[in-house]
Image (cartoon, rainbow, N blue to C red; front, side, top):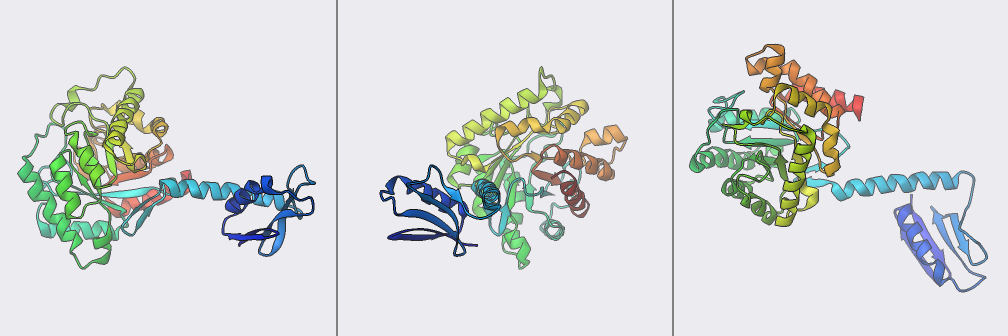
Length: 365
């Protein structure tokens, strides 16, 4: 399909109906002669005409106005998507099109779910390959546990855990592995800077930029996206800080404030993701409220990240103390999150959650 705007002495082709119509309307005031008109041709056939003797443009042919009006709306939707789309390496993120999957790669000895399983280069690489082959869209690499009650590692320890695996992934002969977008799960500006330089693409900060505000400047300088999560206190103290007057309102206000600070630091507003922080300074009932009222975060006009995978609130509801037994409980929360507007789901179990997400997308999108 091609459109052409024509009038005596002028002719220009356009791929989009919207652009052709805008150009034709802009030319109306320059039409001086009663004997000339402006036409839009679609594949050589006139579909729109305006002349000085007409009070308004005329659409030529039965059904033409309705068909082109629908095309105008579709082109507008496509343009809106393109304006907010991310392109990271070979991966396009078109928000609203489908749910994107973030595969967890914890290179720590003490994470709540899989601590110690992937804290060697060989095991971490094997897990990275498994996640990529399970169709993950992002690898989220973290070198410091944020489980309730955990104490912070040293800067050197986190650095020694995170950087080697990022470099190994980027130099690996597995083509999908080389090109997978990587987020670094850190609250430290220095780690974020080093990880981005080593080949990471996104900063995922569970403190929402509050622990080390300079992380916002680091992200801005790299022109990278950032994921901002709601949190109170620290992993060591957060479960003592679960009193809220209005849970969803306070989460939204916190994330809005931190997003404003990110923009002030120079981060592109279109590159900010928000995360309500399920399991972080939240009770079991509060986590369920967040899932059921997730649409409240849409007021921020940012993609929404949700991480429920294997978390303790699922274990408490289902009486499953072992985190790896929470697969089906996780599946239910993932479906609920997608139904209420999640754009990215953070998961440990790649193949299973991929299928849950694809089915939920067909049901809810």
